[in-house]
Length: 234
Image (tube, rainbow, N blue to C red; front, side):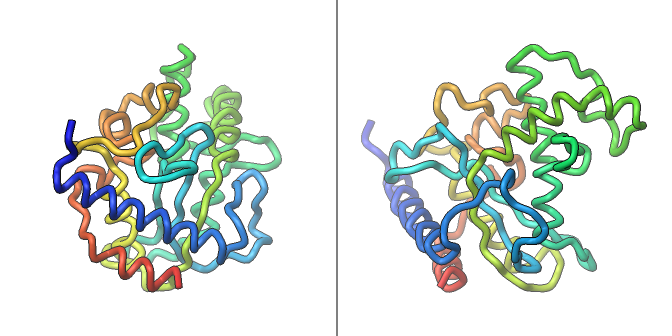
């Protein structure tokens, strides 16, 4: 099949996006893994993060691992959530190796995919915004498996210190990055591998987008965001 003009344009934009991430990687001194990170490291107060996943290779836009999740924090006015606070929610608890999937949508959807792929029995997973100790203890083994999955994903972060709120620059970068990467309703580029855990997700938008994201995967991206992204990286 001959790629459409829109697909070729998106391929060029994805190549530019990944080139900018390589520049960011150099500036950060390399990607990190949450399993190796702590609050004692130097983190910007606010920012956007980009996760890759072992085994998920770019097949159309260049070499290396593809981005599988983009996120930020403090998108509600008045929020005081900091970058490391959000990342630590995804990481989980060092002492137990577990975590709290009710405080991290990333942990929730990865755990649900593990349940469906492996035929696990966790009827309380994702139920409610909180749970008593007994239920959380019963979920501990799965929480540990989720920590292992997410903790092994290389990630980058881009510090953007702006005001909390839905119109923040961080939100603009997050939305457009997800929309650019997403394969929802488009000729697919850098498709997930056949073994990608996300294929087992109960969320159609995760499966269709090839990302551990549901929000913004059906949005249209604005190519001019890449110039803003470049200036932030530089």
